[in-house]
Amino acid sequence: MTATAENPQVTGLRQQVLVLYLASSALDQRVIGWSTYDGTGQTHPTTGDSDVPPYETGLDALKDGWRLFQASQLNPPYPGHEYDVSFLKHEFFFEKLV
Amino acid sequence: MPHPHRKHLLTSVQMAHFVATGALRMDAVVPDDMNQQAIEVLKGGIPGVPYGTPLSEAFVDSEFVERLVQLPEVAGAIHSLVGPEPTVDHHAVHIRKAHEGEAQNLHGDAIIDVRTDAFDVQLMYYPQDVTLEMGGTLSVPGSHLRRTNESDTGRYQNLRGQTRLVCPAGTVQFLHHGIWHGGRKNDSDLDRYMFKIRFNPTVRQVRLWNTDDLYDEQVAAELDQSFPWYENATGRLEKYNRIMLWRAISGDDTYDPNYWVTRVSNRPQRVVADRANNPHAKGKKEMV
Image (tube, rainbow over the protein chains, first blue to last red):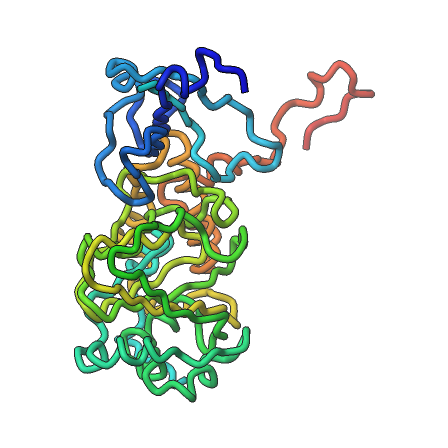
């Protein structure tokens, strides 16, 4: 593998990922769910490890230096399934390189 | 199984709570003498039961479990939720070892199950005091009507308002088959035990409980509650789906105190427009 700026062996950087689930599609809405994954291996977040969200809103995460890299699309419901409930709809992925 | 006394059946308010939350909890309902025995019994294993065995036959070789399901409050809840003589789908002893480093992903048991007029319940019995550190079962109130398959929800680590079970010894909870849940990491020095039985109904689940309070205002209040993890818009759909389930189990297909179902199914058929105003109409007729 060629060494590049993205190669962690060269940069020493690792990705931390924060997933926030928000109450609507607006990024400044209330956090209703959260997950974290730590590419440094220093912490080991897991299912059911906290009752307190890391931020009140998605915008608060931006203010704290998290970079948004993916947001859920807004898809219309499939015909006939307008009243179905399923996965959380408003999922936002953030990262920090540390 | 003898028919439980009416005083041990669930009330309509308790059933509405179950329909809204997907869970019903009975703290310390199992007496201490049984809790004292339980760990040894569970360590020894409970004999396996073929899928679909009637409850009255399932535990003839396990006196402890037979006593458990015949406790008046437990038997009353089973009858109220799934009716007389349900079948045992399966049972299992779950042990979260002391300092076990892994939590289960958030999941629903079995496979996606979208029945709208029937449901299974899972009895979970906790013979010990369960502290937060012992990793009591995580469950998500009001998640049972979400159409997701098994561990596809594994990405969700924490949801606002989730339940991290902390309970006294002898607690039993009943969970709807669809509820999102998982065994949490045990950070304590004690192994944690839980015994689970899944029941399948064998009758239509209609008014199986004590219906004296069927139209109590608290029934509507239970059905209309929201949860902190609901999205603003989807939270309204949750209420729609709850009302549909309540209609199915109460047998009242008009019940809708907050109009969530009624307004979106209102398609009147009576025509009052004057046909004479239609330029494509052939000839004029007097309206009768």
